[in-house]
Length: 304
Length: 288
Ligand SMILES: Nc1ncnc2c1ncn2[C@@H]1O[C@H](COP(=O)(O)OP(=O)(O)O)[C@@H](O)[C@H]1O
Ligand SMILES: [Mg+2]
Image (cartoon, rainbow over all chains, first blue to last red; front, top):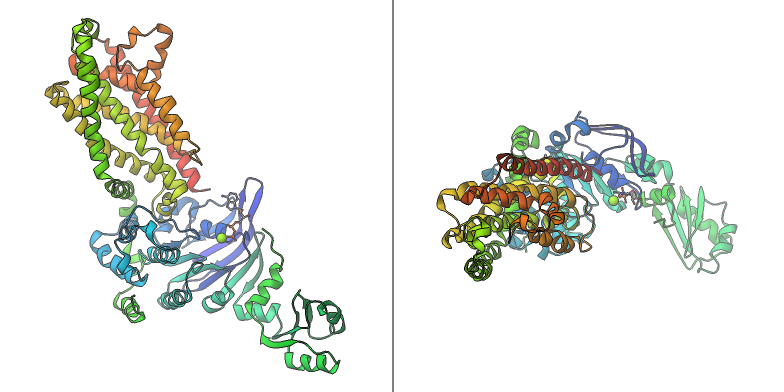
């Protein structure tokens, strides 16, 4: 469905996307993960056949977006990171007008709009101007709008940012059903639970480059240990104690508030620590998550 | 609140056909400009009462004060001899009509474009469908034309009511006024498509371009009665070309035929240049 080789986007002399390769197959849920500024949205806009690439190859549905943009976009559903609703128009008009852009008939849209209003839980707000909606409602409306043409590929750029947990779970459920119907999903997110729930395969991006690629389980296996032992000794003692237990696990990491020991058997390592006569204030053994992979690959420091 | 059950129902009751079956790409492409115009007109209709009030109130007030008030003064003092033998109101009417068209386009080609690119980013929403930059420009042009047909139509009806123009020439006068609106609007659209922030730009356009243009385009007195070194202001102004053209049409104001032709050509050049620049810049800005 989507094929990218050496895909590059340069703004002036700043390289936002730096020659990335990936492929998305039909019916797959594909994730783009990465910290702010990694180039996720820029990549999404190029796939959405709006922003022009400055280098490399890109085909969507077998077509080159530089030449066949409108034709590709006819089969995409796009949920941009920033809602771009028509503020002056009513909620139902936003859906209707957007459907018209795809050349859909008024008759078809009459039913479709009702269905999408219900999906977005905005039936009661149908006659409000879009600008009168709360942030979460706007988000839901933008997501519903992206479904109006029943797209082959649904592109969601941080879809659940600003949604409450209920709406988030309803959306995940709906996205899962769409996937079952054969719709291809491309999702960016910085919620790791979302990526783990939704994505069959994902890439982790940083500074315009791909740091890793695989299924969530693959990535955890490759970049994290099976378990993580978290121990706290109080912020003043962490560094000193970390040296004494550095031999444990595959890797240890000292944070201001705790020490992380990446290992295959957290409980055994905890016993070792106790044997050394060290008594952590609190301790916790947990399974590794995508979040550990993410932090390992893209670092903990905030770069903005 | 809608319950989860009703959402489940909506998911299951609808049959997903898929865009490959649902979307007719060539239909969407052929009518793209129309769909943009439709969206714009929906937006305008939110303001229809103020548009209607303004387009009726403005000419009525104007004609009472300037047309009839000043007109009586001019006509009494034998000014009509310098106006080609017609009443001041008749002399003024073509200029008023053209400037109404120009101002209507000026409104539509300023804030709505800022809204599309910056405030709502609604152009980017359009552009995520089969709609392209060129369609957005054409749609804006079409919707502005529709609005101007209505507002200038109202304006002209008032002029007819005041006896400022003849019914027989109403249609050609209407078209020449509309042409000046399209000409000005095309260039205005091109310029606005470069603007990233308002920064008072549109206030400047109003005060330092539109207002002087109306003053220096032979609106209130013949261009020839201005000092020669100021007449160039009229020659570059689309309003003067439209006004002069309108006077020829309205009461057969004497003019050489090459000048009449040059009015048409000049206004057409504005359209071609404005649209050419606008198509390019709008497409470029969307693809950034
Ligand atoms: N239109 C633009 N002009 C210049 N720089 C841009 C533009 N859009 C994005 N960037 C820059 O490109 C980088 C990647 O941005 P983006 O793709 O939005 O990242 P992400 O979505 O991963 O947070 C950022 O450093 C951003 O400042
Ligand atoms: Mg982003």
